[in-house]
Image (cartoon, rainbow, N blue to C red; front, side):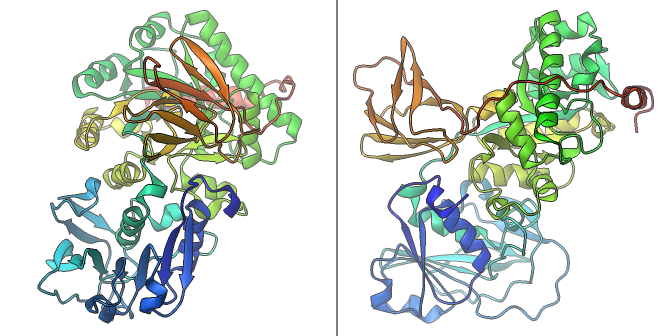
Length: 535
């Protein structure tokens, strides 16, 4: 994503930076936000007209003549203490703490240990570590003055935002992101509502169970504990469908759903450097198999691709968009691992959804590890909470899903639904008076216009073929151009669907090569292992 293709188009956020703070992190944020960074020594003249200040000079925060904007003060030197594993962070239960983290105790890795913060009389503590304050706030002359005991964690060379603010590392950069949301709220706007799904890779419809997964039990528990489970099924497995198993899915679409897991599930199937014609043929064959499954069973399968083992090239993502898929679901780590030279790597992980080669990509994280941290990070950034695993993750029982769902539901009202619906809730929005500005992050977006808005303006995403889009609403449809104000006065209902054409050009499907017998045998053996010898 280039600097002239920012998702957020609004009055720039002007940040005065005094010092050399995480340059790659700030560069990535500049590519995503209308952020203007001014590097200079702090002075009252320079601070005038700034949205915020990033400094290591604590003295400026005590000088009322210099205070004209919110400020974040970071350590000028690193702690001399020896680093020792993850730290337990205790967030205060105060309104000034970002809502997903409020009142929680979490673990976070850090690059250095915190310096000691000596509190002023007017400071409140937003977070502590081992009883010591690590993030504070004071309100002086109407300005918020934040202090952090940690330096910013920069993006590593060849790394991404997703690693510098993740379930593993988040505490060092949270103060900066919180500052940017405060000073740039009008530009950044609102994130999508909470949305979530659980996902299992590999299960098929050959029997009402798949290893430790029992579809009937999943339905019962999901209804009782309010969650949705999607199963990424392999197109190669659609040669046979157990009728009663298909009925479980048909009768419970609110609880369970299907999506696509590769094609033959071979190693690096979607990550290899295929010829363009081979990519097209592979995508075409996967969809052809899925369509046959739908026609024979009456089921609907989400046009969302989950690459085997997360491996997918950018070229293949483009082929998915061209071939009829709504998008893909891949972790940022997998995208980086299989596209190490891509120009978009550094910005991964900030927006509610990625768009790569015209293909919308949602993130996902493992059930194991710091799944709760991952859920909080996604909630804070407006990304869908998609937690995934395999059948053997239920070796201690389906209670794993119940517990994780309880945690996610504790964040507030959550829209648990299938992956195609999660795709269609990918957007950013901001408001100016009675105008709502909407930027879709997927070719097809479902949106409920706020009751206070009288006009809607669609900001086209960078990947749209042109600036125009189609708005479907109750009773009709209208085509609007980029920046055109669409009046909502007198219209009944606020639910709309915005449809953009992607920047890719559809290509003629080709027939894939016959599936080698070795792959068929390998898949049968793998399924047998999953069903009869669960780990």
